[in-house]
Length: 445
Image 1 (cartoon, rainbow, N blue to C red):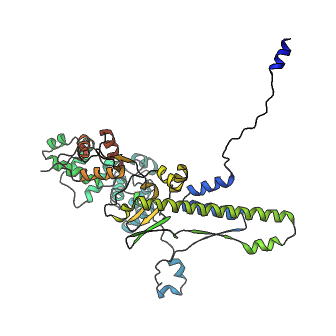
Image 2: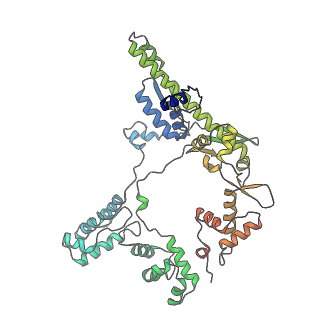
Image 3: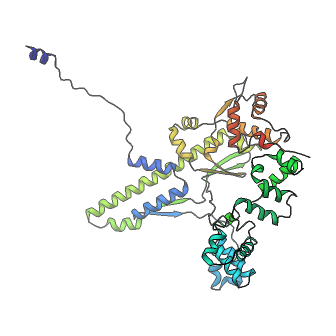
C-alpha cells in the first residue's frame, strides 16, 4: 500500500524552457583580440596569418615623406648602400678602448688599464677591487692605483668609480661650475646631506642653509650612472591611429595612414587552384577564403570602432583641441559605450594602446577619460585632470621659502569650489611627481 501511494504521487513532467546564452565563437575572439591590439601587434598577427593562409597577402602602406638627394660623390660607388645604413650605437667598453689606445702609450700601465676596463659595468662602475686585481695579475698596489687614476680620467666623467660617492667626486673635480663647498660636503657629509640634515651641516662648515642647498641642487645635476647613455636600448616610436585637424574652426577626424596595412586576397592563386577537380583541394580553398573574409571583417570592425570612439572624444572634448589651456571635460568609458550602444569592455579594448595625433602633440585615447568631481554649490562637474592642473599651478606659484602644505592646498582648492580630502591631494601630488612641502622648501641668503 505504501509503494502504491508513492507511485500515485510521482509524476513525470516534460517542460520546455528558453534561455539566452552568449557563446564566444572563434570569430568573436579574433575580433576582440584585434580590437585590443596595437597597430604593430595587428601587423604581426596578420603576418602570421599570411604564413598559414596562402590566399592572404599583407602590405604595409608607405607614407610619402620628404626626400633628400644623395650626394653624387657616392651615387655610383660601392659605398652608396653602405653609407645609408644606420650607425650602430657604440658601447661604453668600445668607447673606453678607443680613448685608451688614443691617449696612452704601450706599456705596463696601459695593459693594467685595459684589464680594469674589462671589469667596468654598463653603468660605468668598476666591479672588481684592486686587491683582487693584484692577486690575479701580480702588479704592485702603486701601479694599480696609477692605472685606476688613468681609467678615471677617461670620459664620461665618473667612469671607473667604485661607489656612488667616488662617482660624484670624480664629476665634481671636472665641473667648471661646482659650488665652493661641494667637494668637501660630498666627501664627508653625503649621507647627512641626502637625509636633509642641512642645519647641522651649515653649522659644521659655518655656512648658510642656502649654500648647503646649492650643493644639494648641484648634485642633482650629476649622473649616478655615467655609462647609462651608452646603452644600446632603442627608443620606441608611437604610430598614431587617428589624426585631428582644425580647419575653418571645425574639427576634422581621420584615420592615420602612417604604418597602416592592407589585406589582399590572392585571386590569381585562388582561381588557378579552383580549377583543380580535387574535392579536398576545393574544401581547403573554401576554408581559407572564409578565413580571409572573417579576418577582413574583423579588421574593418576594429577600424570602425576606434574611429567612432574618436568621434565621441572630438565631440565631448572639443575645448581640448581648440583652446590654448586644453581643458578636459569629465568623460567615462561607460558614457561612450552608451552613446555607441556597445559594451564598456569593448570601449576599453578600443582605447588600449591607441593614439590620437594633434598639431600640439600625440595623446593616448585612454588619457581623455577622467572622472568628474562636483563643484560645490553647482551642478557642474570638473575632471580630475583639471584638478591636477590646478594643483600644479598652485605649487608652481607658491612661495618657495614657505611651500604650501597639503592641508593648505585643500583649503585653496576648496575656495575654488573643489572639495577634496588631504589624502586625495597627497595622492594627486605623488602622481604628478611633486615632493612634499618639506622637500620643496628653498633657502635664500
